[in-house]
Image (spheres, rainbow, N blue to C red):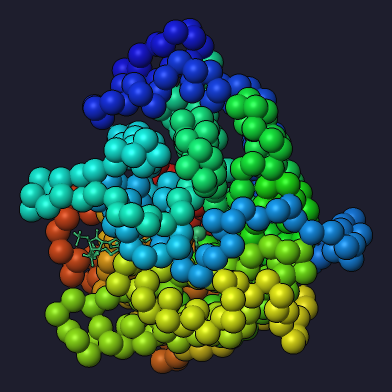
Length: 522
Ligand SMILES: CC(=O)SCCNC(=O)CCNC(=O)[C@H](O)C(C)(C)COP(=O)(O)OP(=O)(O)OC[C@H]1O[C@@H](n2cnc3c(N)ncnc32)[C@H](O)[C@@H]1OP(=O)(O)O
Ligand SMILES: O=CC(=O)O
Ligand SMILES: [Mg+2]
């Protein structure tokens, strides 16, 4: 049941989170309502444009650099000024917004912490509100937590990381807050509340309202964020360009509009980031109608090869030409507990990934876990300054390389891994956890998307496996049943298995796994 607040048109679901009313204040709700009224129609038309573009890809189109924006790509322009506390971003840690992890991340020694309402969060109503309370407490200087299990106290240290927030992508609704019965955008909800309650306090503390923007597909979607930022800044009487954002280039179409995205947001943007996991997912999904783009095992699609290597080099060149940061991405290897050799091997994989990034010219990178901060710091210590803005790659890959698919094995083991990881991830998500360790890897909404779209793709084209068999429905069903039987019982397992199986068997590629799963979340 929902409670009707002061504005009769705005309905807010009740929450058990203590202090939620400090976040859902009348003025904050008014701000969110204004954002909704101004921008909801645009959001919906941009989502429709994604579907229209998909129809063109399905009809045989391949992504290309747009003729209409050739002058933006060839012109001489640069992004706005970068604040002092964002000039050294060599290591950024990411994670969900629960109090313990926020404190651990801010104290981790990383330069930046990205508090994540996207890939690492299952957006239950309580989790979102508690997350906003935790972030607000950070700027109010009263962030603390006592672990009820261990009794351990968590307090902010003297040199916390710079805080950034990643709101949800444009595709997600926040159904617990409606205006005239219409759910507001999840992204505007996360952005709006964080901005409203913290922008001034962050500025007063010598930092600012900083964001990461996920899953953009076009310059038009970047323009929408730019307009949102302009309205938000005006609302708090902040100078234009106060908000600073980094955009994840993590969809195939966006990789062909990097200049245009920087241009559309040039007052507010400070960099682009290689969101490799969503990028792989997008490459499978967007060109899912092409049998010539069959993928090898998930583990074979590495950043040093094919379209992934090409886009990261192009991102570095594009950013540095415009005075923007070129951020690397996330290795999925995490510390391995209880097996020192395996742990060292995981650390080495992360080290190699970070050395590749710094060697190519990235200005910084992401880590998933505090124990990886020193590994990444060490690799990025080889920069001659706080960043590498003055470096450009010797070679800038063009369209063909940006579309080149990896070669590599396509195996039963790969299919089995996709099933057991994808199903368990979805069970965790339905239970309120957006990032989980599975088989010694970090798994989140983006990595799990690869699992299910890859199986969907292999099935659609009856992909040949290395052992000579084809991946047909019979084989999928057999592997699915065997893997499911071996997964330890856990909450929401059968719901997750049902959702996952349906998406793999669906004729069309479901746009995001979180869309059919969201109605099942509290
Ligand atoms: C594709 C993308 O979008 S990448 C970005 C989104 N993904 C993420 O942000 C993933 C972030 N990482 C995580 O959530 C976690 O590290 C996981 C799920 C991968 C692993 O979790 P666990 O196995 O529970 O971690 P582990 O038990 O080793 O944690 C040890 C300590 O480090 C802390 N920790 C682990 N990861 C993080 C993190 N990212 N931020 C802050 N603290 C962390 C834990 O809270 C724990 O603290 P404690 O000792 O005080 O209790
Ligand atoms: O958000 C990051 C990604 O790799 O996806
Ligand atoms: Mg992502």
